Image 1 (cartoon, rainbow, N blue to C red):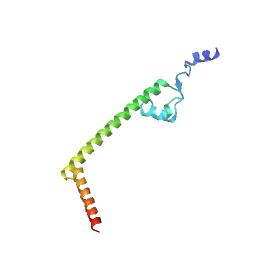
Image 2 (image 1 turned 90 degrees about the vertical axis):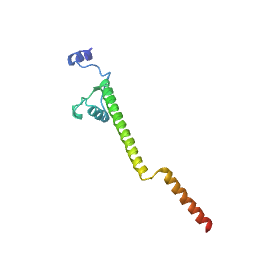
Image 3 (image 1 turned 30 degrees about the horizontal axis):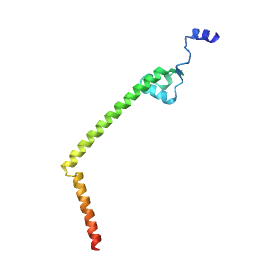
Length: 111
């Protein structure tokens, strides 16, 4: 057929697995390192390339989340130890709050 003849001349395969990347796909492809700029991305990209780029970006995001979680845990440990040195613990805060409530109740009963 005419289409197969043109395909054999251009060396281009059928668009079965190729997709037109969206703007988000283009950002993913650039961030994954597949292309340098969004202008370098062709009109049609194979789904395998898109899947590989998505997987690598997914892994990068997971690494970032792991690092942020570890930093958050470290910050909580540091602030907790500093608060313990100042004797600013939850137990102390609860005792003070209950003493304040008792004082308010006694004041209300006296009035």
